[in-house]
Every structure is written in structure tokens, then in C-alpha cells.
Image (cartoon, rainbow, N blue to C red; front, side, top):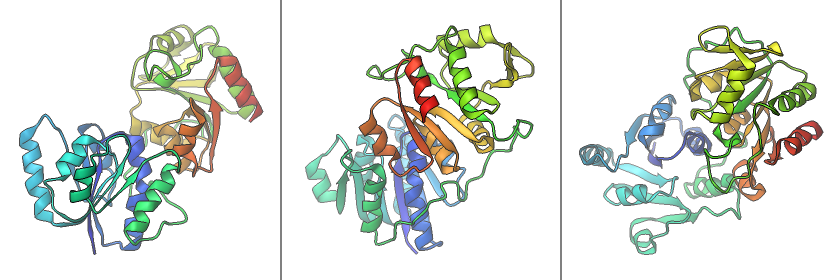
Length: 327
């Protein structure tokens, strides 16, 4: 039995991808112990995996918590410390932590002298290889096997299902902030989706998949989507809206958190979304997924191993609809 401490202080989608490592460790020996260092943002989600024993929160502004965690971690005497997020805070925090061997995946921050004296090996997280191959390098270095298939939700405690009354096998259209300009990265290519051309997107998806459509939104309120909701939907229950035009063939579910989305994805037949955490979820749950991307090279870096995913270049609404129709 070995004890592993893994750093993943970034986003939920990044953690979901990390399941390739945790699954490999557990398949090598079910008695292996895995603990995580997380951010306050993703820690609540990570705690829902039964094969993770302990979760430590790394908050650089809370020195008391940091000291408490240092003492707790060093008592554990870990065999392996592995940094997957490549964050400065993770690297510097790890310097005072005890482990027999230390490894790191890095991207932009590469303090060579620190890496030379405090780490057994490190790997550059470049887009030359896919992220799956980068993680496979670490798995091989741990002298364990990369499994042929990964069940990302093995040992996961799903939220109590409150969506059992949804029609099965629907198309899920997830319109988060990545669809609308001004809420994500400035170098993204955005489409001109608004209440005037929203109908074109719905007609395209309905014609392509011939299923009822369930619509969800992201955690960030956007002006454009609020206008769509206000003009085209009516509230029928607490957080359930139906379309004025399509009636029960187009249902909008408001105020969904990420764990709600997992349940909705699991009940769906097809998912249309922007590439990100939700496309990792849909692929892991074996759902055919059409994911909008901004840059093909970057998208393939994250998605090259995903067999249920089809990529759509993010463009104006007409070109996006044409791509959906033709895929």
C-alpha cells in the first residue's frame, strides 16, 4: 500500500480529468490511500468521491489553515506527492511537505533550481502531447499501468436525483457564459447569439436530433441570456420554464449547480455545449456530445481521448448551425 497526496487547486473540469490518475492508483492496489490538496472552490465537489480519503484546502490568505495543514500532512508520511495543477502556490507549499518522492506537471512556471533540489522529476504540460499522454507519463513513472478505460464516476456519490420527471433521452443544450461575449476570455471567438436568432439554433438542434430539448445555463448571469429567458419563456414551477413557442418540447431549468448538471447530463441522450467541464462529464457518461471550441489545437490537447465528442468551431450563429446540421 502507498499513500498519495495530489494537488488540484484549479477547476472542477481539471479535477474530473485527473480521475485517470486516481483510478489508475486504485486499480493498481485498492488499498492505496489518496488525498487531495484543493482550492476552496473545488474542494466541496472533490469530497463526493469515496475513494479520496482526505481533502486539504490551500488558501494562501489563511496562514492558520496553512500551518494546520502542513502539520497534518507531514504526520501522514506520504510516499508520493504529485502536483497536477502547476500552480505557484502548490509548488511553494509543497516545499515544506514531506514525501518520499515528488513529481509535478508544469506549464508556464518552471523554477529550475527548486525543481532540481526538491522534486524527483517534472513534466512539461505542453500542447505537443495531449493531456491524456501527459498524465500517462506520470502514471508510468509511478510504475503503475494506464488502464484501457476509465470510469470517471466510479466511487462518486451522485446528488439525490430531483430530475426523474424529465423526459428521457432528450437533447441537453447548455448555454453558459462561454456562448456570450464579455464574460469569458477576451481572445475567444464569440457568436452573435441573442433573442432574435435564438430560434434558429433551437430549430437546427430540433431538426438534427429530433428530440425534446432541455436548456440549462451557467453560474454567471449574462445579459443576452436573460433577454432570451424573459422574452421566450414562461415560468411554470419553481425553477422550470417552458417555451412560449415550443411548449413542452423546450424546457429551461434555472438555478442548476454543477452537481445538478451531472444528473441532467446523465438523463440526456445528446449534449450540445461549449467544451469544458460539462463536456468532460458527458463524455465520461458516454453521451454523444457536440462541443464548441475556439482553438482546435488547444481543444485537442484536452479532448483527444474522448470518443463521444464532436468538435464545432465557435463562429457566428449561422456557421455554428451549419456545422451542427452537417456533423
